[in-house]
Image (cartoon, rainbow, N blue to C red):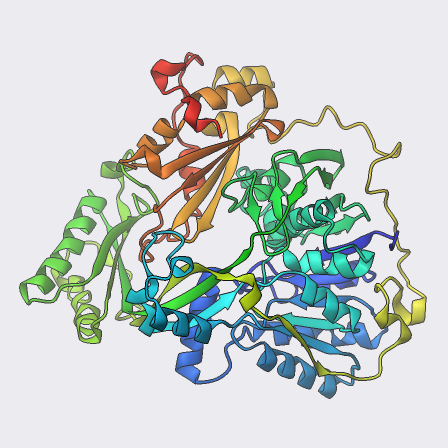
Length: 631
């Protein structure tokens, strides 16, 4: 087993991230072993499905090809870092061929491998035709049978795991291009290759999966989306995360010296729970991970150790992310300025839809929002909206009928002269009509999916490419001395027990700030995200001593009421006492793709506005925790 740590970084957290990040990382960390790139979210597959329909061919993020181009000088100079990217989208072979063309034209040798086999569209179509009510094909979020959408499916991809990635690296790949794989598996595959772990070692797989989950969203680990983002330094160029992983799977998380952002207990804990439902059963194709025993230790400035995840066998079935065509959608907006701007905007929005309805033009789904007033709120109207003198009216509609969408497209602009005084912001013209694709999560038996590794381009490589990637530039001579860190503990750790976790900005002693508590954000920080139609929200005590108060005050009933959810059964609460955190899974709250906050990114900030009991003694009378909530 390899004893040297694996130094792995993420250089792309989503399709649309900074293209320069990879070259900048390798300029300051030239001896990184692996860079990972995460391009594929659920919404990404919908975009790629539309791109394939529109262009009849390439359906992969072309940004990755530009990134590969930017790294050719590094490789020509002798750089050894390998790339693992799920940039193949719906056409991993096409992406790999495009990368091969770049290497060829730039005179760079190397092997490019494709991990394929995730495309199960024809399997789903055949299964649905034979049995439209097949249990494993029911929508995981709604329970609906697939029969109602089977004839409109345009993509279906199983989430593959780490083993084919490891095999591709074993076969000497400099670049590994995958289709749909689990995000964390990019890191797990690198660990399997580097350390030669037994693929049945569940504890090590769980540890690597935890690191992969932390890295996958790039700068979200190093200060991006932080609750206290205003206090994060250098946000104009936040550094991307680097992990130093030991042979036992324990890892130290950091970032390149001199970059913006920060790595501390608060940023790591927020990202650890990001988009996690049940933290005791984080399901991946490689392992089922329990995060409930994870320990987060600050070792120094921008150095945080993570360990303690536990592993159980992976599920027998793989998750499938399918997309289906569901007509069209469009959204248009105008700025409304003046007294009672929100009231005027809402009236104008209703007037547009009422006028269309009077002409017998109706939509399957419609939405009127006022940006700056209530667009990201759920349930109750935001306080002070009557006093607002400026808002952006946004009207969004969806329908199977293209003709209905054309009528809507022409109905908004008349407000320029027929709407309230102060209507402006119409330079962008009429709304654009877009195809609407919806997400269909379901399952497939693992044995029916056959991952495959294909070498798209093989060329003579330096001798070191076939090993773990440890080495230097210029034939082993590096201008930068490689640092080897003790990642499993030891006497070298500095005492940082006095560093406070995520205390709110504003100065003053912790005691004086606690006396002034008014909102949940004074007591806690957190983050929210989407799991299909569901949302997750973490609530993390700024001081672990305050966790009991979170248990008492942030109950299922209070959360449901504050977020405008009529049925508290839609809300599940999970406790992580070791992290001083609560994690909420909210079913069905993201049921509309038309909303500005369709992916629930604002829900965490909204929940942190929840008022606290000023006495600090909420108890059962103020919505104390029920026994069935303590899961």
